[in-house]
Image 1 (tube, rainbow, N blue to C red):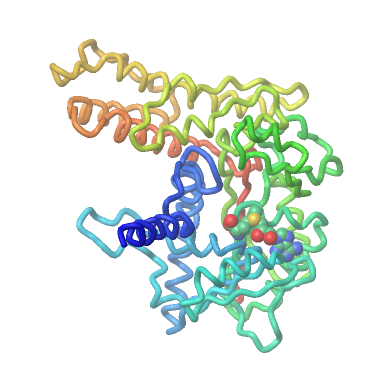
Image 2: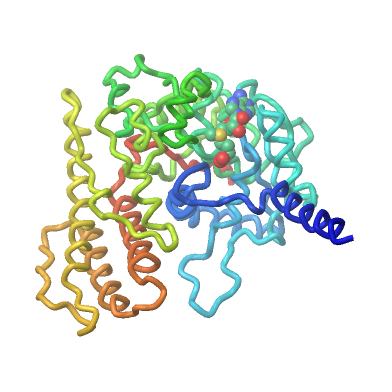
Length: 429
Ligand SMILES: C[S@@+](CC[C@H](N)C(=O)[O-])C[C@H]1O[C@@H](n2cnc3c(N)ncnc32)[C@H](O)[C@@H]1O
């Protein structure tokens, strides 16, 4: 009897392990690491917000709900990304902060070539009849039938457009979309950036060279395992895209459709924090900055701030990029060093800075000055707290957000990061 009860109890633990809920979760590595959740998803949401707001306003004024087509949806991460877009600056009292609430969504259709991902997406969302998934190949044109109503938002995320290894297939897809628009739509394209600091070995001035990179998916393993499994690592052929190349593709699609596909904004995502900064696969000078930023956002973990400092190594013949990255590096490091000083000079017992702080020069870029001032307020406001690990759990995550704000303000949407995103509009009204 006692043995029977014991067996039963052990079964409970076995079931828990099988469910995955007992898996050790960390934000330091993996697909959904802290940079993905707190930086990449959030930066994308920040740029999308005003356009999504406008789109919702349009559909609601027509008494219609929003129709979304996610091209290369994987297991529907794009839906989660969109569903997480919030109203701008909701007050502390508000509870309803999401823009895309279930009642305003008409349909989310996800489309992907990989049948396992489609099955996973169906498993995750089978309870929601508004979520539909189909398997197919977007290089064969727009995957919608003739009698299907047009969509309001054509969405691609996380480098998916770089799966078009030949530009002509993306030109055709965009032209198909533009041709089918009845009134208005938004199109989001997401490519792998040509000039990321992760791969200066692939930078070229002649765009007819190094068009598709051999992208090795090595970052899913930690260093040791990565080397042990080198032979089994998966490789993808992905189109590297600069702003100029994106503009050429979109202009060609506009001409093909005879309809304007208007660029609204381009932005660079993950300038110093792309996944291959940590692997140094394509740049021997790359430093594990993503891991250090992941650590800033990790609960109860203290970060050595010197691990965040970037030492950009220039590439000859690319002065326009060297100037840009050196400026970013200087701003980035200045903020980190300033926070280091704040922590040194703060006297927890006296609840104030023990030594006067250096004046922030007026010549610094406004975003840097703002973030330095903010971090001063954070350290001053929280340094004395004592309970709850204020450095690990409040000051360091705030430094993460300050760095994110800084880099988001200084990026120029030129393809100088892991991801280049373009937001476009077709307006026939
Ligand atoms: C980088 S993943 C992005 C997945 C997802 N959108 C996300 O945000 O995580 C690229 C996705 O594009 C899909 N894909 C690649 N080539 C495709 C094609 N020719 N047609 C349709 N889907 C494709 C892949 O299966 C993969 O799910």
